[in-house]
Length: 293
Image (cartoon, rainbow, N blue to C red):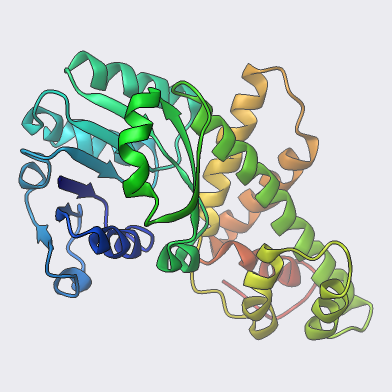
């Protein structure tokens, strides 16, 4: 099977490396030149022309930052015009529900196939092949893609037609946003009460509310160092998409709305390119701490 890959960011690179373990030929493209292009398995070829990445491929994966980037890499570049009829486009980027449906319609109109397959998880799960895929589209397309997804993810869910995968991803990330904002509140409240961050996490870890995401962010918060595993600006983008979709389905997300408001302030203050856990640093700055973006 011949595979194309569009988007070699922090998530895309380890996902491609895991996909390469199946032995298929993979041609990968990124919109900007990255130094890791030479550090790929032998069956992965990194090209500078997007058309070379998608021509004569059975499946083309897309893993970029947002809907504008998806449109840019597929349509503005003319990539879809170089795909053969029947090519399966697997969009693993996080975009809105209606955005995904519009994207599917455009792709279907060109005689191509479409599967939305956004992932739950950040860089470390991507490296470990432990992501979770939430997919929407035609069931036959999911069945075809599932063995490929299996080397990148520990679990893949088929949730129905196009839009359902996107909806589930936004649902999960709205919860993630609430957790990150609550973690930041709790840590800073703890500091103001005289507790070291390490002590706050020790007690939380012994409680019923401990979770894998708190474990994953603990060291960043304790060291007050936030290299982007999942940049705050991207979580804010997802929160806004979730809030927009909640309006469509007449849902109420008051906690998510509050969390998004805090994130918006943090991004405006220069924390957007840092990891989402940097909300702790932002709140520390708001309460008189010294940490700045």
